[in-house]
Every structure is written in structure tokens, then in C-alpha cells.
View 1 (spheres, rainbow, N blue to C red):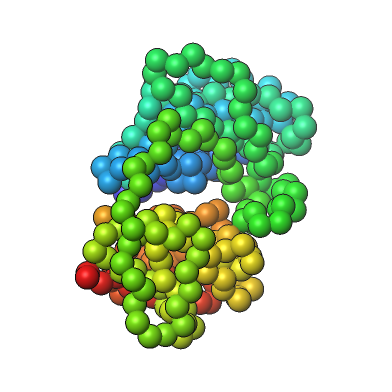
View 2: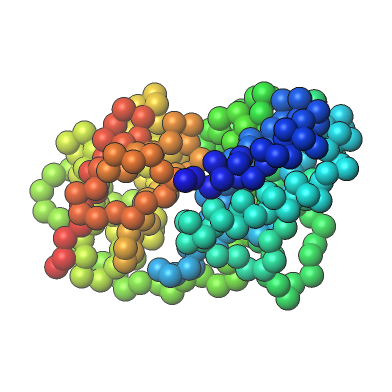
Length: 288
């Protein structure tokens, strides 16, 4: 059973009883819960092969009208939402840097039925600063047009600006020469693909070598592998070479499908098929 479904079942008694009148507006607990899940996925920071860190401090901003109706129940609802985030993190093998909490706040610029989620990563020993990164409005209000080169977010999708890990991962030794044959293109930052392994992607018959620490796929001219497909966002997804290699959705409009599964992130193996828009990308890696 999915985490969201279990969260809905736990709230059934509350929604049918105490919260029955409170949630007649457009803001529903399961919508907020889904936004918190996306916030975790979009903010996930890979520290090493065994640890992926996600935010542990969340603010759900509500319109003045919705906040007034929910404030008497904010403690109970915050506890339930935090429990949902914890279960989701365990299912995805995410970890936290400090205590987990979800709080509700009033935002005067939001209309009734709209909300937005902000998050940050706080270590247990750190003092909690008051400054959060601004986020786009929530459901039913279209976000502002993205800046050039930025990925387009669908309405209601939570965005983030979590602080980076305190230390960068160690640089990998230079990779081997590119695979022979095909249309091979190096991208900026090449030279950290992992010793002894050659990696590339095949797109529409062209081969693009992966020899850097990250490879961005998208429609933008700033993408490392440019894909001319109207269903592809400007910066749609990112491949991170490693052991294992990973692909991550960069908050795209249409998402990614890896080996037949819709996902936010996935481990790649030789021959994995990544679908973005209507384009299929084949990931390849060979030893030697």
C-alpha cells in the first residue's frame, strides 16, 4: 500500500469528523502530503552510494482564510504530515540531518484554496535560521514564466532551494577515451566519469559520451545533450555517473520513465531506456 494511501486512511476519521467542515475548501490534506513527497524527491542530495539526504524542516503556507480555518488543528495535522514524510523517506531510503517537522503558516499573497511548500535541511546541532528560500505558488495559480535555462514546473509542483552538503564529494580520476564510432560529443566538465568505465547515451541514432560529473538532458541550448522534442523541458533530467549511475528528474513538466516505470530518480544499468517526452534515450556503459 502506498504511503499516500495509508496517510489518507489515517485521516479518514479526522476528515469525516473533526476536519469535515475545515476541508471543504480546495486545500486537501492529501494534496499537501503529495507536495511534501515531491519536495523530498526534488531536494534529494546524494552524499554517497549509501546516503541520500532530504529536507527535514517544512513550511506549508496557506491563504489567510484557509489558515484561520486550519490553525486550531495545525498541531495535529502537522504531526500527521510529518509522519507521512518519515514513512515516505523510509520507503525511498532517504535520510534526515536533524529532527523532522511540518508547520503551517499564513501567507497574505495567497488566495483561498492555494498553498505552497518551502523546505530546508537543518542539522541537529545547528541553530534554526529564519530565512527560507521563496517558492512558487501552489495549486490553481500558474507560476511565473521560468528564467532562460530554468526547468518549467507544472502548477502546484513544489520547488526548492535546499542548502548544499557541507563538503563536495571527492573528484574521480580521469575517465578513459570515448567509445569508437557514432556521433560522439563531449560536454563541459568532462573528465570525472569513473575509472575503467565508458559511458554514453544514444539519442535518435547519435551517441553522446558521458565523461563529466553530470549530464543534463533537455531542450535548452545549455543542456549537455540537447533533445529537440516539444514534450521535453528545457532542463528535463540529469544523469550522474557513478557506482551505480543515476538519472534524476529536474522538475520537468512531463516527468521521466525509466525501463517502463514513471519515477523521479532511478539507478541505471547498461541498456536502460529513459523516456523523456516522446524521445527514448538508451544509456550504455562498458568496462575497459
